[in-house]
Image (cartoon, rainbow, N blue to C red; front, side):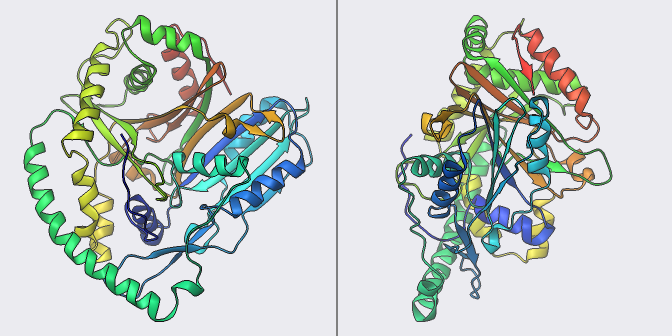
Length: 448
Protein backbone atom coordinates (compact mmCIF):
# COMPACT_ATOMS: atom_id res chain seq x y z
CA UNK A 1 0.00 0.00 0.00
CA UNK A 2 1.55 3.33 -1.11
CA UNK A 3 0.70 6.31 1.04
CA UNK A 4 0.78 9.96 0.07
CA UNK A 5 1.80 11.64 3.28
CA UNK A 6 1.95 15.38 3.70
CA UNK A 7 5.33 16.44 5.03
CA UNK A 8 5.24 17.95 8.50
CA UNK A 9 7.76 18.83 11.17
CA UNK A 10 5.13 18.60 13.91
CA UNK A 11 5.27 16.07 16.75
CA UNK A 12 2.20 14.00 16.04
CA UNK A 13 0.81 10.48 16.07
CA UNK A 14 2.98 7.96 17.88
CA UNK A 15 5.72 10.59 18.36
CA UNK A 16 3.34 12.55 20.56
CA UNK A 17 2.36 9.45 22.52
CA UNK A 18 6.02 8.75 23.35
CA UNK A 19 6.59 12.39 24.28
CA UNK A 20 3.59 12.30 26.63
CA UNK A 21 4.84 9.05 28.18
CA UNK A 22 8.20 10.68 28.87
CA UNK A 23 6.69 13.94 30.15
CA UNK A 24 3.97 12.39 32.33
CA UNK A 25 5.61 9.21 33.59
CA UNK A 26 9.34 9.50 32.89
CA UNK A 27 9.22 6.52 30.51
CA UNK A 28 11.90 5.95 27.89
CA UNK A 29 11.45 3.81 24.77
CA UNK A 30 14.70 2.79 23.06
CA UNK A 31 14.77 0.60 19.96
CA UNK A 32 17.93 -1.50 19.63
CA UNK A 33 19.53 -2.65 16.39
CA UNK A 34 22.01 -5.48 17.02
CA UNK A 35 24.84 -6.59 14.69
CA UNK A 36 27.51 -9.28 15.05
CA UNK A 37 30.31 -9.24 12.46
CA UNK A 38 32.87 -12.02 11.99
CA UNK A 39 35.57 -9.33 11.78
CA UNK A 40 35.95 -5.81 13.14
CA UNK A 41 34.64 -3.36 10.50
CA UNK A 42 37.20 -0.83 11.77
CA UNK A 43 36.98 2.43 13.67
CA UNK A 44 36.89 4.62 10.51
CA UNK A 45 33.73 2.81 9.34
CA UNK A 46 32.13 3.14 12.77
CA UNK A 47 32.91 6.86 12.92
CA UNK A 48 31.55 7.28 9.40
CA UNK A 49 28.29 5.63 10.46
CA UNK A 50 28.05 7.90 13.50
CA UNK A 51 28.74 11.01 11.41
CA UNK A 52 26.24 10.04 8.71
CA UNK A 53 23.48 9.36 11.25
CA UNK A 54 24.27 12.73 12.85
CA UNK A 55 23.68 14.35 9.44
CA UNK A 56 20.33 12.63 8.91
CA UNK A 57 16.75 12.68 10.22
CA UNK A 58 17.56 10.89 13.49
CA UNK A 59 19.30 14.05 14.71
CA UNK A 60 16.19 15.85 15.93
CA UNK A 61 14.84 17.45 19.08
CA UNK A 62 11.55 18.89 20.28
CA UNK A 63 10.79 22.59 20.26
CA UNK A 64 7.86 23.19 22.59
CA UNK A 65 5.01 25.39 21.48
CA UNK A 66 3.41 27.99 23.74
CA UNK A 67 0.09 27.99 21.92
CA UNK A 68 -2.77 25.73 23.11
CA UNK A 69 -3.82 23.13 20.51
CA UNK A 70 -0.71 23.70 18.38
CA UNK A 71 1.56 20.68 18.25
CA UNK A 72 5.20 20.79 19.33
CA UNK A 73 7.74 20.91 16.49
CA UNK A 74 10.62 18.72 15.45
CA UNK A 75 13.74 20.76 14.80
CA UNK A 76 17.28 19.79 13.92
CA UNK A 77 19.50 18.80 16.84
CA UNK A 78 23.06 20.07 16.79
CA UNK A 79 24.26 17.38 19.20
CA UNK A 80 26.27 14.47 17.82
CA UNK A 81 25.18 11.00 18.89
CA UNK A 82 27.49 9.17 21.24
CA UNK A 83 29.99 6.64 19.89
CA UNK A 84 31.27 4.39 22.69
CA UNK A 85 33.88 1.90 21.47
CA UNK A 86 35.17 -0.53 24.07
CA UNK A 87 38.73 -1.84 23.63
CA UNK A 88 38.72 -4.79 26.05
CA UNK A 89 37.30 -7.85 24.25
CA UNK A 90 34.43 -9.91 25.63
CA UNK A 91 33.83 -13.65 25.28
CA UNK A 92 31.70 -14.68 22.31
CA UNK A 93 29.23 -16.29 24.72
CA UNK A 94 28.77 -12.91 26.42
CA UNK A 95 27.54 -11.04 23.32
CA UNK A 96 23.88 -11.45 24.26
CA UNK A 97 24.51 -10.21 27.80
CA UNK A 98 26.48 -7.23 26.47
CA UNK A 99 23.64 -6.33 24.11
CA UNK A 100 21.14 -6.60 26.98
CA UNK A 101 23.27 -4.27 29.08
CA UNK A 102 23.42 -1.64 26.33
CA UNK A 103 19.66 -1.39 26.07
CA UNK A 104 18.83 -1.76 29.76
CA UNK A 105 21.25 0.95 30.86
CA UNK A 106 20.56 3.41 28.07
CA UNK A 107 19.72 6.98 29.00
CA UNK A 108 18.50 8.63 25.82
CA UNK A 109 16.88 12.06 26.02
CA UNK A 110 15.16 12.43 22.65
CA UNK A 111 13.17 15.57 23.43
CA UNK A 112 16.44 17.31 24.28
CA UNK A 113 18.20 16.09 21.14
CA UNK A 114 20.03 13.02 22.46
CA UNK A 115 17.91 10.43 20.70
CA UNK A 116 20.44 7.77 19.63
CA UNK A 117 23.84 6.27 20.36
CA UNK A 118 26.27 3.65 19.03
CA UNK A 119 28.18 1.12 21.15
CA UNK A 120 30.72 -1.42 19.93
CA UNK A 121 32.95 -4.10 21.42
CA UNK A 122 35.38 -6.71 20.00
CA UNK A 123 35.23 -10.36 21.07
CA UNK A 124 38.03 -12.71 22.03
CA UNK A 125 37.69 -14.65 18.75
CA UNK A 126 37.96 -11.53 16.60
CA UNK A 127 34.25 -10.90 16.07
CA UNK A 128 32.67 -7.50 16.62
CA UNK A 129 29.35 -6.66 18.32
CA UNK A 130 27.60 -3.39 17.52
CA UNK A 131 24.50 -1.84 19.13
CA UNK A 132 22.54 1.14 17.82
CA UNK A 133 19.99 2.58 20.23
CA UNK A 134 17.34 4.90 18.81
CA UNK A 135 14.50 6.38 20.83
CA UNK A 136 11.14 5.24 19.50
CA UNK A 137 10.03 8.86 19.89
CA UNK A 138 12.21 9.87 16.94
CA UNK A 139 11.77 6.83 14.67
CA UNK A 140 10.24 3.41 14.16
CA UNK A 141 12.12 0.40 12.80
CA UNK A 142 11.42 1.14 9.14
CA UNK A 143 12.50 4.74 9.65
CA UNK A 144 15.85 3.57 11.06
CA UNK A 145 16.22 1.29 8.01
CA UNK A 146 15.86 4.37 5.80
CA UNK A 147 18.43 6.30 7.87
CA UNK A 148 20.90 3.39 7.70
CA UNK A 149 20.47 3.05 3.93
CA UNK A 150 21.23 6.76 3.50
CA UNK A 151 24.27 6.42 5.78
CA UNK A 152 25.53 3.47 3.72
CA UNK A 153 25.24 5.59 0.56
CA UNK A 154 26.91 8.59 2.27
CA UNK A 155 23.76 10.53 1.41
CA UNK A 156 22.29 11.48 4.79
CA UNK A 157 20.27 14.71 4.78
CA UNK A 158 18.36 16.41 7.58
CA UNK A 159 15.49 18.48 6.18
CA UNK A 160 14.14 19.61 9.57
CA UNK A 161 14.28 23.34 10.36
CA UNK A 162 16.90 24.71 12.71
CA UNK A 163 16.13 26.52 15.95
CA UNK A 164 16.82 29.87 14.25
CA UNK A 165 14.43 29.08 11.41
CA UNK A 166 11.54 28.59 13.85
CA UNK A 167 12.11 31.79 15.80
CA UNK A 168 10.25 35.08 15.53
CA UNK A 169 7.12 35.83 13.57
CA UNK A 170 7.51 32.89 11.17
CA UNK A 171 7.44 30.48 14.13
CA UNK A 172 4.45 32.21 15.71
CA UNK A 173 2.58 32.23 12.41
CA UNK A 174 3.30 28.52 11.90
CA UNK A 175 1.99 27.73 15.41
CA UNK A 176 -1.18 29.77 14.80
CA UNK A 177 -1.84 27.95 11.54
CA UNK A 178 -1.24 24.56 13.18
CA UNK A 179 -3.49 25.40 16.14
CA UNK A 180 -6.31 26.39 13.81
CA UNK A 181 -5.84 23.20 11.83
CA UNK A 182 -5.96 21.10 14.98
CA UNK A 183 -9.25 22.69 16.10
CA UNK A 184 -10.75 21.68 12.75
CA UNK A 185 -9.11 18.24 13.02
CA UNK A 186 -10.60 17.70 16.49
CA UNK A 187 -14.11 18.47 15.25
CA UNK A 188 -13.69 16.21 12.22
CA UNK A 189 -12.11 13.46 14.35
CA UNK A 190 -15.00 13.43 16.81
CA UNK A 191 -17.43 12.65 13.98
CA UNK A 192 -15.11 9.98 12.53
CA UNK A 193 -14.71 8.33 15.93
CA UNK A 194 -18.43 8.01 16.47
CA UNK A 195 -18.95 6.48 13.03
CA UNK A 196 -15.95 4.14 13.23
CA UNK A 197 -16.73 2.93 16.74
CA UNK A 198 -20.33 2.15 15.80
CA UNK A 199 -19.09 0.23 12.76
CA UNK A 200 -16.57 -1.78 14.80
CA UNK A 201 -18.89 -2.54 17.70
CA UNK A 202 -19.28 -6.27 18.03
CA UNK A 203 -16.64 -7.05 15.39
CA UNK A 204 -14.52 -10.10 16.12
CA UNK A 205 -11.31 -8.80 14.57
CA UNK A 206 -9.87 -5.79 12.83
CA UNK A 207 -7.68 -3.07 14.17
CA UNK A 208 -6.86 -2.30 17.74
CA UNK A 209 -4.56 0.26 19.30
CA UNK A 210 -1.24 0.77 17.54
CA UNK A 211 1.11 -2.09 18.48
CA UNK A 212 3.70 -0.07 20.31
CA UNK A 213 5.03 -2.98 22.24
CA UNK A 214 7.72 -2.52 24.83
CA UNK A 215 9.83 -4.45 27.19
CA UNK A 216 9.66 -2.57 30.48
CA UNK A 217 12.15 -2.43 33.29
CA UNK A 218 9.79 -2.68 36.23
CA UNK A 219 9.42 -2.02 39.93
CA UNK A 220 7.48 -4.08 42.51
CA UNK A 221 8.20 -7.27 40.62
CA UNK A 222 10.71 -9.15 38.48
CA UNK A 223 12.58 -7.39 35.68
CA UNK A 224 11.44 -7.90 32.15
CA UNK A 225 13.28 -10.62 30.24
CA UNK A 226 15.09 -10.72 26.92
CA UNK A 227 16.02 -13.52 24.53
CA UNK A 228 17.32 -13.68 20.96
CA UNK A 229 16.97 -16.75 18.74
CA UNK A 230 18.45 -17.65 15.34
CA UNK A 231 16.71 -20.22 13.13
CA UNK A 232 17.55 -21.48 9.64
CA UNK A 233 15.46 -19.50 7.11
CA UNK A 234 14.79 -22.36 4.68
CA UNK A 235 13.81 -24.61 7.58
CA UNK A 236 11.49 -21.89 8.97
CA UNK A 237 9.78 -21.23 5.63
CA UNK A 238 9.40 -24.97 4.96
CA UNK A 239 7.67 -25.51 8.31
CA UNK A 240 5.34 -22.57 7.62
CA UNK A 241 4.37 -24.03 4.24
CA UNK A 242 3.89 -27.53 5.68
CA UNK A 243 1.33 -26.15 8.12
CA UNK A 244 -0.55 -24.09 5.52
CA UNK A 245 0.89 -20.73 6.42
CA UNK A 246 3.51 -18.07 5.78
CA UNK A 247 6.47 -16.75 7.73
CA UNK A 248 4.19 -14.16 9.33
CA UNK A 249 1.46 -16.61 10.37
CA UNK A 250 4.05 -19.03 11.80
CA UNK A 251 5.58 -16.17 13.77
CA UNK A 252 2.14 -15.17 15.08
CA UNK A 253 1.30 -18.77 16.04
CA UNK A 254 4.65 -19.17 17.79
CA UNK A 255 3.93 -16.21 20.06
CA UNK A 256 0.38 -17.38 20.71
CA UNK A 257 1.68 -20.79 21.68
CA UNK A 258 4.27 -19.22 23.96
CA UNK A 259 1.54 -17.27 25.77
CA UNK A 260 -0.40 -20.49 26.33
CA UNK A 261 2.71 -22.40 27.43
CA UNK A 262 3.45 -19.76 30.08
CA UNK A 263 0.09 -20.29 31.81
CA UNK A 264 -0.88 -16.67 31.23
CA UNK A 265 -4.66 -16.33 31.82
CA UNK A 266 -6.06 -15.34 28.43
CA UNK A 267 -9.34 -13.43 28.89
CA UNK A 268 -12.43 -15.09 27.42
CA UNK A 269 -13.46 -15.75 24.74
CA UNK A 270 -10.25 -15.64 22.66
CA UNK A 271 -6.58 -14.71 22.66
CA UNK A 272 -5.91 -11.23 21.32
CA UNK A 273 -2.90 -11.08 19.01
CA UNK A 274 -1.67 -7.77 17.59
CA UNK A 275 0.26 -7.77 14.31
CA UNK A 276 2.30 -4.70 13.43
CA UNK A 277 1.77 -3.01 10.06
CA UNK A 278 4.09 -0.47 8.47
CA UNK A 279 2.28 2.55 7.03
CA UNK A 280 5.41 4.24 5.69
CA UNK A 281 5.12 5.26 2.05
CA UNK A 282 7.48 6.83 -0.44
CA UNK A 283 9.07 10.11 0.67
CA UNK A 284 7.43 9.62 4.05
CA UNK A 285 9.63 11.44 6.57
CA UNK A 286 7.46 10.96 9.66
CA UNK A 287 9.31 9.85 12.77
CA UNK A 288 6.79 7.03 13.33
CA UNK A 289 4.57 5.55 10.64
CA UNK A 290 3.30 2.22 11.95
CA UNK A 291 0.00 0.80 13.05
CA UNK A 292 -1.42 -2.63 13.68
CA UNK A 293 -4.29 -5.06 13.41
CA UNK A 294 -5.75 -7.35 16.04
CA UNK A 295 -6.93 -10.89 15.44
CA UNK A 296 -8.68 -13.07 18.00
CA UNK A 297 -8.07 -16.83 18.16
CA UNK A 298 -10.02 -19.16 20.43
CA UNK A 299 -8.80 -22.59 21.48
CA UNK A 300 -5.33 -24.08 21.50
CA UNK A 301 -2.75 -22.79 19.03
CA UNK A 302 -0.59 -25.74 17.96
CA UNK A 303 1.13 -27.40 14.98
CA UNK A 304 -1.70 -29.95 14.85
CA UNK A 305 -4.20 -27.15 14.32
CA UNK A 306 -2.07 -25.65 11.56
CA UNK A 307 -1.75 -22.07 10.36
CA UNK A 308 -4.68 -21.78 7.99
CA UNK A 309 -7.01 -19.99 10.40
CA UNK A 310 -4.40 -17.50 11.60
CA UNK A 311 -3.39 -16.82 8.01
CA UNK A 312 -7.00 -16.20 6.95
CA UNK A 313 -7.77 -13.99 9.95
CA UNK A 314 -4.62 -11.95 9.40
CA UNK A 315 -5.29 -11.51 5.69
CA UNK A 316 -8.82 -10.27 6.33
CA UNK A 317 -7.63 -7.92 9.06
CA UNK A 318 -5.02 -6.42 6.71
CA UNK A 319 -7.67 -5.93 4.00
CA UNK A 320 -10.04 -4.25 6.46
CA UNK A 321 -7.24 -2.04 7.73
CA UNK A 322 -6.31 -0.90 4.24
CA UNK A 323 -9.76 -0.56 2.66
CA UNK A 324 -12.41 0.01 5.30
CA UNK A 325 -10.95 2.74 7.47
CA UNK A 326 -10.18 0.47 10.40
CA UNK A 327 -7.20 2.65 11.26
CA UNK A 328 -9.35 5.73 11.69
CA UNK A 329 -10.04 5.18 15.38
CA UNK A 330 -6.36 5.28 16.31
CA UNK A 331 -5.61 8.02 13.78
CA UNK A 332 -8.36 10.29 15.12
CA UNK A 333 -7.90 9.89 18.85
CA UNK A 334 -5.14 12.44 19.34
CA UNK A 335 -6.84 15.57 17.93
CA UNK A 336 -9.63 14.97 20.47
CA UNK A 337 -7.40 13.88 23.35
CA UNK A 338 -5.21 16.96 22.86
CA UNK A 339 -8.13 19.08 24.15
CA UNK A 340 -8.07 17.33 27.54
CA UNK A 341 -6.07 18.26 30.66
CA UNK A 342 -2.77 16.41 30.89
CA UNK A 343 -3.73 14.78 34.18
CA UNK A 344 -6.74 13.18 32.52
CA UNK A 345 -4.64 12.17 29.50
CA UNK A 346 -2.26 10.40 31.88
CA UNK A 347 -5.09 8.42 33.45
CA UNK A 348 -6.39 7.45 30.03
CA UNK A 349 -2.96 6.27 28.88
CA UNK A 350 -2.66 4.03 31.93
CA UNK A 351 -6.08 2.45 31.45
CA UNK A 352 -6.08 1.42 27.77
CA UNK A 353 -5.84 -2.40 27.62
CA UNK A 354 -3.33 -4.03 25.32
CA UNK A 355 -3.37 -7.35 23.48
CA UNK A 356 -2.13 -10.61 24.98
CA UNK A 357 0.87 -10.60 22.64
CA UNK A 358 2.28 -8.50 19.83
CA UNK A 359 4.35 -9.56 16.81
CA UNK A 360 6.37 -7.26 14.55
CA UNK A 361 7.73 -8.94 11.43
CA UNK A 362 10.10 -6.60 9.60
CA UNK A 363 10.65 -9.11 6.80
CA UNK A 364 13.85 -9.15 4.74
CA UNK A 365 16.61 -6.88 6.05
CA UNK A 366 18.01 -4.54 3.35
CA UNK A 367 21.54 -5.58 2.42
CA UNK A 368 22.77 -2.03 3.04
CA UNK A 369 21.73 -2.36 6.68
CA UNK A 370 23.90 -5.46 7.11
CA UNK A 371 27.08 -4.02 5.57
CA UNK A 372 29.68 -1.86 7.29
CA UNK A 373 33.33 -1.27 6.49
CA UNK A 374 33.42 -4.04 3.93
CA UNK A 375 32.00 -6.57 6.39
CA UNK A 376 28.55 -8.16 6.38
CA UNK A 377 26.82 -8.98 9.66
CA UNK A 378 26.38 -12.70 10.30
CA UNK A 379 23.83 -12.05 13.04
CA UNK A 380 21.34 -9.19 13.23
CA UNK A 381 18.25 -8.34 15.24
CA UNK A 382 15.88 -5.57 16.33
CA UNK A 383 13.93 -5.04 19.55
CA UNK A 384 12.20 -2.23 21.45
CA UNK A 385 11.83 -1.67 25.18
CA UNK A 386 10.23 0.81 27.52
CA UNK A 387 12.04 1.84 30.67
CA UNK A 388 10.41 2.74 33.95
CA UNK A 389 6.94 1.20 33.76
CA UNK A 390 5.94 -0.29 37.14
CA UNK A 391 5.20 -3.99 37.47
CA UNK A 392 1.55 -3.52 38.44
CA UNK A 393 0.90 -1.86 35.08
CA UNK A 394 2.65 -4.68 33.26
CA UNK A 395 0.39 -7.13 35.08
CA UNK A 396 -2.85 -5.49 34.01
CA UNK A 397 -2.46 -3.68 30.68
CA UNK A 398 -0.70 -6.11 28.33
CA UNK A 399 0.86 -7.35 26.22
CA UNK A 400 2.37 -10.16 28.27
CA UNK A 401 5.12 -10.91 25.74
CA UNK A 402 6.18 -9.53 22.38
CA UNK A 403 8.64 -10.26 19.62
CA UNK A 404 10.23 -8.90 16.45
CA UNK A 405 11.47 -11.01 13.52
CA UNK A 406 13.87 -10.28 10.66
CA UNK A 407 15.07 -12.38 7.70
CA UNK A 408 18.55 -12.09 6.18
CA UNK A 409 21.08 -14.39 4.56
CA UNK A 410 20.21 -17.92 5.65
CA UNK A 411 18.67 -16.88 8.99
CA UNK A 412 15.56 -15.68 10.70
CA UNK A 413 16.35 -13.91 13.97
CA UNK A 414 13.57 -13.45 16.54
CA UNK A 415 13.93 -11.21 19.57
CA UNK A 416 11.59 -11.99 22.47
CA UNK A 417 10.45 -9.59 25.18
CA UNK A 418 8.96 -10.97 28.37
CA UNK A 419 6.81 -8.22 29.92
CA UNK A 420 4.34 -9.71 32.43
CA UNK A 421 6.30 -10.01 35.70
CA UNK A 422 4.62 -13.23 36.89
CA UNK A 423 4.48 -15.22 33.64
CA UNK A 424 7.51 -13.87 31.79
CA UNK A 425 9.71 -12.53 34.58
CA UNK A 426 12.09 -15.54 34.78
CA UNK A 427 14.76 -15.30 32.06
CA UNK A 428 15.79 -18.94 32.24
CA UNK A 429 12.18 -20.13 32.11
CA UNK A 430 11.46 -17.85 29.14
CA UNK A 431 14.34 -19.41 27.21
CA UNK A 432 13.17 -22.89 28.13
CA UNK A 433 9.63 -22.22 26.97
CA UNK A 434 10.82 -20.59 23.73
CA UNK A 435 12.90 -23.70 23.04
CA UNK A 436 9.93 -25.96 23.82
CA UNK A 437 7.63 -24.01 21.52
CA UNK A 438 10.12 -24.04 18.64
CA UNK A 439 10.70 -27.75 19.17
CA UNK A 440 6.94 -28.36 19.06
CA UNK A 441 6.97 -26.83 15.57
CA UNK A 442 10.06 -28.91 14.71
CA UNK A 443 12.24 -25.82 14.23
CA UNK A 444 15.97 -26.06 15.00
CA UNK A 445 17.27 -22.98 16.80
CA UNK A 446 20.09 -21.29 18.69
CA UNK A 447 19.41 -18.94 21.61
CA UNK A 448 21.94 -16.19 22.30
